[in-house]
Amino acid sequence: MDELAELDGMALSALIAKGELSALEALDASIERIERLNPSINAVVHAHFDLAREQVRHVLPKGPLSGVPMLLKNTGFEATGMILSTGSELHRHTVSQRDSTITARYKAAGMVILGKSNTPEFALSFTAEPEAFGATRNPWDLERTSGGSSGGSTAAVASGMVPVANSSDGAGSTRLPASHCGLFGLKPSRLVNPVGPVAAEAIAGMSTPHAVTWSVRDSAAMLDATGGPDLGDPWASPARPGTYLAALGALPPRLKVAMLLKPPTGTPVDAEVLAEVRAAARLLEGLGHQVTEIDDAGYDGEALKAAWRVIAGVNVGLGAAGGDPGSPNIARLEPVNQEWVREGLATSGTRYLWAVNQLHASARAMGRFFSQYDIMLTPSAAEAAPKIGTLAGAGKSLDAFFDQFWAHSPFTAVFNTSGCPAMSVPLGMTPGGLPVGVHFGAGFGKDALLLSLAAELERAAPWAGRRPPVPG
Image (cartoon, rainbow, N blue to C red; front, side, top):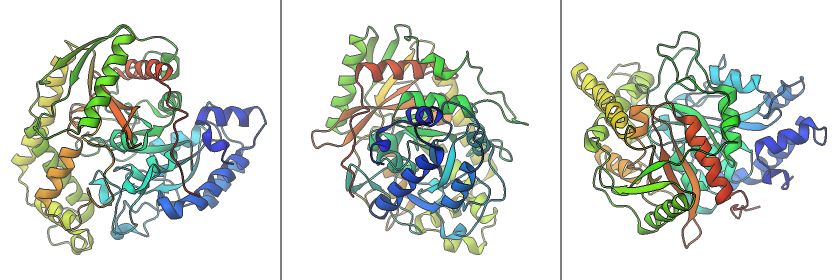
C-alpha cells in the first residue's frame, strides 16, 4: 500500500486500466493510509468512505485519472451527501444536496471522492487551523503548518493519503500550501475552472478552483477534465489550444523572465527563500531563458491589500450572516472572523466598488507587465512553513492578523485580483529540510505556457522522489 502512495495519479490510473489493480483496491489503499496517518496529520475532517465505495461499485468513466482517489476541499465545493462545514462550527452538520459543477466533472472523469480536507474557517487564513476541527500538520515537520487555506488537501497529497486533491486559491491558497509541502500547485486563469452551478464568481472573481499534485501531468490532466465554461457563466473563459496534457510534450519558447524579489508592500523575505529563487533563475538561464531582475511590477500593492480585505469581509459577511449585522451566527465564528465580518457588514457600497476597481486596475497593470515579459518569477511565500499557531488568528486583532497574513505571501494575490494564472513549483529546500516553492506567473489565458514551462522544469530538476518522512 505504501508503494502505491509513491505513484502519481496517472500512474495509478494506468495500473487500474491494465487490470493490475482494481479501483476498489486503490481506494482501500488510500483509506488505509488515511486511517493510519490522519490522527497525527489531521488532513481529512469529513470522511465519506461509504460514498466512495458506492462510486467504485459502478463502472467508472474512462480517462487518464479514472479510479484515482481524491479529496475535496472543505470550502466551496459541494458533493451530494457529503458534509460541507467550511471549517466552521456554524456548519458542522451541513450536508450538500447536490454536486458543484467541478465535482460533477471529477466524477465524470472517473475520479473517486473520499471526503473533505481541512481548511481554516471560511478559508480566511494561510494556515489550516480552524478552532472547530483542529490544526493540519505538515508531513515534513509535524510542528509546522501545512499552509492554507488548502492545507488539508496539500498535507493529504504530501503524505500519500491520496495522489491528488482539489483546492482553491483566493490570494495564494493553492500555491502557498503547495510551497510549504513540496507539491506542484497551479492557480489557473479566472474561469478556466467553473465555480457553478449557482455562483458566478467567488470573492469578486478572485477565488479559482483547481488542485494540488505531485506531478505536473496530474495537474494538466485534472484541468483537461474540469476546465471549460459552465451554463450561464457571465464571462467567457480563456480559449485553450488543444489539451493541457498535450502542452507538456512541447518545449516552451525561450522566455523573457522578470525576477521580482522585493514585495510591493515592503515586507521582508527570508534569505533562504531568496536563495532558492535565485537558484531557479540560474536553472532557467541554463535552459536558455532570459532572466532580468526588476524592482517593481507596476501595481499598487498597498491598494490591493486593502481591497482584498474589504471584498473578503463583505463576502463572508453575506455568506455567514446573510448580510445581517444582528445575526446570531456572527457570535459562533472565531473571534478574528467575527471582527472581519462586522467590518465587512459596515462597509459602504462606494467602498466596496472602490475595492472592485482596484482588482480591475491590477488586471490592467498585469496586462502591461506581460506585454514586456513572458513570466514573472518570485518567491511563493516569504518564508518556509512556520510553526503551528504562528499564522492562526487566535488571540490577534484583525489588523495584526491581516498584516501577518499578507506579509506571509506578498507576491501571490495579484494573480487572483488580475485573474492571471500562476504556479508554485517545488524546486527548493531549506538547509533544515523544509520545502520552498518558487512562483511563476504568466499573462491571462497563458495556462498552457505555464504548464509547458513547469514540465520543462520538472524534467530538469525532478522532485518526485523527494518525499517527507511521514510518521506511522
